[in-house]
Amino acid sequence: MTTAIEVRNLDMMYGDRVVQRDLNFVVETGDIFVIMGPSGTGKSTLLRHMIGLVAPARGDVYYEATGLWTGDDESRQRVLRRIGVLYQEGALWSSMTLAENVALPVEEFTDLPMATVRDVARLKLALVGLAGFEDFYPPQLSGGMRKRAGLARALALDPDILFFDEPSSGLDPISSRHLDDLILELRDSLGATVVMVTHELASIFAIGTRAVFLDDEAKTITAAGNPTTLLHESGDPKVHRFLTRGREPGR
Amino acid sequence: MDTAGDAARARHIAVDETEPGVLRLHLSGRWTLDAHPPSASDVFERARVSMATRVTVDTDPRLRWDSGLLIFLRGVSSAATERRMSVDFTGLPEGARRLLALASAAPAHGGAGLDGDRLSMLDRLGARAIATARTAVDALAFVGEAGVGVFRLAIGSARFRRSDLFVVMQDVGARALPIVSLISFLVGVILAYVGAMQLRAFGAQVYVADLVSVAMTREMGAMMTAVVMAGRTGAAFAAQLGTMQVNEEIDALTTLGISPMEFLVLPRMVALALMMPLLGLYADLLGMLGGAAVGVGLLHLGGLEYYERSVQAIALNDFAAGLIKASVFGVLVAVAGCLRGMQSGRSSAAVGAAATSAVVTAIVLIIVSDAAMTVLFDILHL
Image (cartoon, rainbow over all chains, first blue to last red; front, side):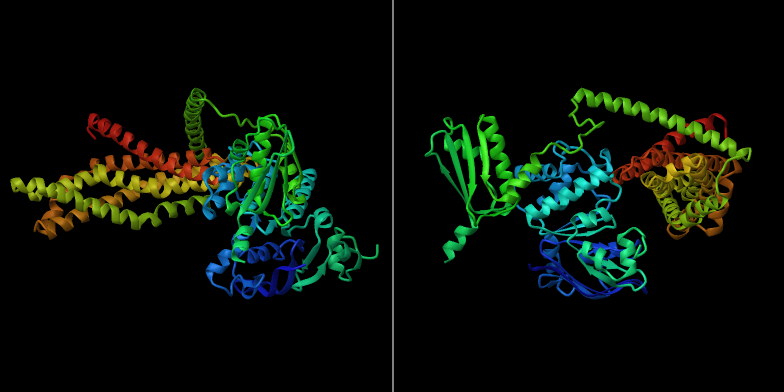
């Protein structure tokens, strides 16, 4: 296994307020890596640091040998081109059809002829089960469909690493399960690495290979490892409570 | 060494038709998007496959692939179906096969309740006409509801927060002063210039003062302020209410039993109706100052002389006409902004369209009502 992402000595602050400090972890290639923790601990903020939207107060995020913030702007852009992000609400551009949403990154960053670009858009939408919805506008779709369309857009440039911000929030259990299966399938067939922020326990145990737990009081990572192993072996009562929906240890 | 590297980088397709009835495609090299995958139908054309009933595709074990390969294979699949041939993808990389299966699976949830059919020209025209009629009815309903709101305000039973009213009044009043100052001063300057050019021919430059003061008080003060406010405040109202629509904030008010009309629209309407006449008066003053600057600075009229001519030229009824117009414009700008905001769709594009439409509607209403009032005031000798 090789290292896909390494987060080194990362401090995250909002103004003077420390969100999390001293974060150190490694995401291996092929991982489905879960960032978990109580609401408001800075999980999404960590994700925003990892995808280059927010500059860290200290430390850096390394993709192979390239630091997102220690390098120049051009190297950061090169790294960002290799990742795909599914935002919480899909974040589709509402004035464009689904096909146009997916095609935009392909048009901008490749020199493919228009017909091929359209084929790519159709393929990606078909992969997420939205074949036939190419000409729909995002407001015409349900929340779950918007999310899948967002995933199709994230896949547009065949990224090596996929980021998901709360992929199952707002989805019914069955759609959420479908999405988990899809993530797993895409990871296996594309050989991609997945990083996701979630507190959906079912997803965490079903597909997560490794996880870090962000603590709201210690303001750093207090547990890391395979979610199932953490459930059975973590000595941290908070992690245990989180993974068992509030049951006290020993009951 | 280099040539071997190049060969690995290029994509290669070997077509083998030795086995009767079978078209065998062997793919090697690099089948990625940046290697520009070929069109499947071209491959079929070149292979002259009239005899074949089956296509098998297999790949070199060192094949490098991404979506480019998948697009080609989907093309092969549909070209084969067109020619009534069966396809055999068993020789493909495991991942590619699974992705193809995923992509060809029926949509997990059909588009229940959504009609994605392309509409014909006539259908679209009809839909547009119905939508326009509906918008007109909505606008009427909105005006009616606003009227009811004003009535309830008059009898004291309208429900809104007084503090909101003052915030909006400050925003549409005091905060608009700088831009209104600039615009009306310059309008005064322009009027004086245009007037002076004509009047100088008769040696009647001194009447520039009359012209500027009458034009500003009766017409330009109110109208320019209204146009500025349509762009500044009408668009802001539409964008704000539209965003509230997107965030379901308006739904939240409705389910609480609070009328969005009273809570959101009424304070804005009242604030603009109260502030516009004041802004109009202020614009009149600034416009006359602009005229005086030209009169004194360029036409060499005495300051006192200019002042006295202005005072003689205008009477209270000129101000009354201007003030009535300003109040009407204020209500129109507020109605246009709030109407478009409340009608806004639930997307960022819709909010943009609502803001644009608010400005356009407001300016049209301003000009049309101005023309009507000018004629009416003439008949009434106001």
